[in-house]
Amino acid sequence: MKTIALRFSDNYAPKEGMIFLHQKVIDDNGYVWYGKFGNRISKDIIEEQLKTDDPKLLLIKSGSVERYWLHFTSYQESIPELDKIPEYYRNNCNDIKCWFKVIRFERAEKDVLSKCFVLSSGDCLSNASKHSMNPYFKIEYRGDKDGAI
Image (cartoon, rainbow, N blue to C red; front, side, top):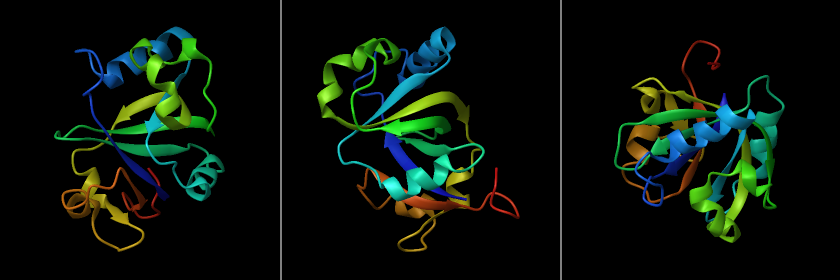
């Protein structure tokens, strides 16, 4: 399965953390908008994901071993409805270049990075992420025989 791995941090989130605060909005509304700061992500891979039965991205928490699958149903570049965004980053909406409508976060297996390979280089994501400052990677997940999870 081809997808994208994104780095994230809790630097700007309150002490509860980004995942917890996004999950709270999902619990209250059925979904939340997750914003990606900085450069836009390749629409080709996002559109490829949206054609699958379960579109997802891999989130890699910087400086931590936490990894999550972000399950989403749509993508947009315009600012979504503010009440479906965690309050702590509503004032930064203009800095966010793309938004994912997330229906679920799922903790990824501990060795998920060793099952992901960067499409441009073929390097294992566990190595590439240590030696690169890229905010995201186009990857292929090889978690089982047919590449699905």
